[in-house]
Image (cartoon, rainbow, N blue to C red; front, side, top):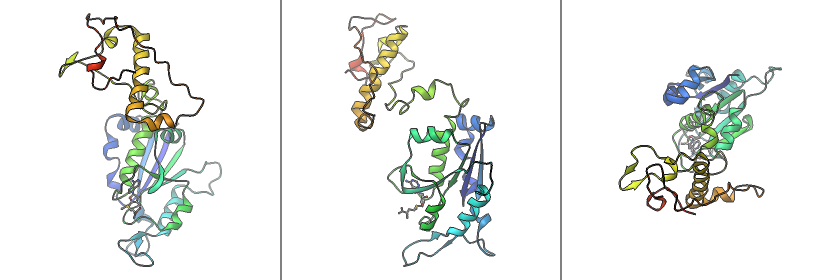
Length: 265
Ligand SMILES: C[S@@+](CC[C@H](N)C(=O)[O-])C[C@H]1O[C@@H](n2cnc3c(N)ncnc32)[C@H](O)[C@@H]1O
C-alpha cells in the first residue's frame, strides 16, 4: 500500500527538499509513499489569488484566511467521496500536541495524510475545526509549517515497511520508550577511550544484555521523564551486570568507566 501525503503550502518548492535524499528519497522512489506539495494560492481568492488578510482587532502581521484552506482540503480530501476513507488532516501550530515517535508510528499506518503548513501569524482560528490534529515539533517558533512537515514526513517514511532494515526501527530511540544504547565503530580506541570489550566478545546474548542495560541507564541519566512516562505495567529489560573478569576478543578488560556514553548501573 502506498501512503499518500499531500502538503498544502505557499512554498511548494521546499518539497521534497531533504526528503529527496537517503532513506526518505528511497522510500519515495520505491513507491512506498507518494508526496505532493500543493500550492495554497491555487485556491486563493480573486484575481491576485489572495490567501491572507489583516487580523481583526489589529496587531502585527497577516493571518491566513479560512476559505482557501477549506477549498484546498475539500479538493484534496473530499469528504463526500464515499468509499475512500477521510484523510488524517494535520495543521502545524506551536500550540499543538507535541509530535513524537508513537504518533509517527500511528501515522505510518494511515492511507492518506494532508498536512497544512501555515505562514505569517498563522491561520484564522476557524481552520482548526477543519483538521483532525494540531501538531507542534517543539517549544519554539519557526517561520512556517514546512519544516515541521518535513520533520514529520521523514519520521513517518522511515517507518514504512521496506524503507529500512526491519530491525532498525525496533531498536531505535523511543521505540520501546527508552533511548538507544551507545554505538561504536572503528577505531577500537579513540581519544584514549576503548570500545567496551563486550561488543567485540562475540557473545550475542551478552551484547544484547549490555545494550539493554546501557539503554536503560542512559535514559535514566539524560531523559528520566521518559521512564516516568512508561505505563505502570512496564518492566524495563533485565539489566544483569557482566562479569568484571571477562575479557574481550582482544584480551582487554572492560572499560565502561572510560567510555563517555557508557553508563554503569
Ligand atoms: C511565525 S509562526 C506563527 C506563530 C504564531 N503567531 C504563534 O505565536 O503561535 C507561522 C507558522 O509556523 C508554524 N510553526 C511555527 N513554529 C512551529 C512549531 N514549533 N511547531 C509546529 N509548527 C510551527 C505554524 O504553522 C505557524 O502557524
